[in-house]
Amino acid sequence: MKLIKLIICLLIVFFATSVSAQIYKFVDEQGNTRFTDDINQVPEDQRKKIQSYEESFSETEAEEESSRQEQEATQASPERAGSPDTANETEPKNLEANRKQLDDFKKAIDNDYNKLVEERQKLAKDKEKAVTREQIVDYNKRVDQLNKRVKAYQQKGKDYEAQVDAYNERIAQQNAARQEKKNE
Image (cartoon, rainbow, N blue to C red; front, side, top):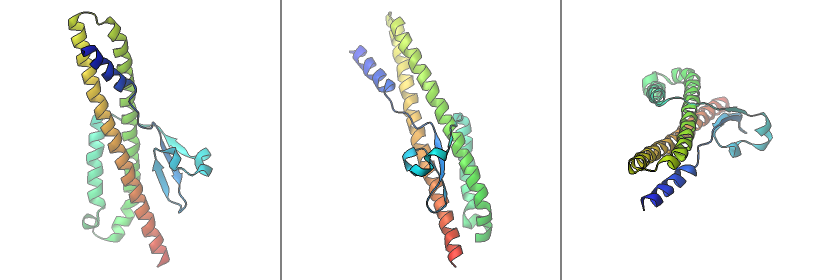
């Protein structure tokens, strides 16, 4: 029975889907620079010349970047910035810093993925070597730990997607404000 559970867990780990390993930068129809991890969102005529980025960073750096991002968001808000003109002047700097944070976060996610794949491969080899009860128990514990890390990895992927969506929304709002200002 435990062997069946183990096999099911391994199958889940082996066939777990990964987060896209690249971020794509392109210009949309309104002239806005956009970032996405889905190449299907990039217009077909721009796919040949789009820029892509592959980046990641460690969990500690991710937490530091997240706290920095929160600080920058509060600094960019109109209540904190003082006047709308001040907020507009600092917005491009904040967007660029935010883009770099997203790039760094993506590096961390990619790095985590590579480590999970290596661990999964090591576990597959160790499975054959586990013959005694103690070895099997140890192996099962390692599989459980890997499954927990996979769940944490998947959550990071979801967090990353949410941050990319928020970033794209900020860019769209900034461009809409610029367009409105031009129309005045």
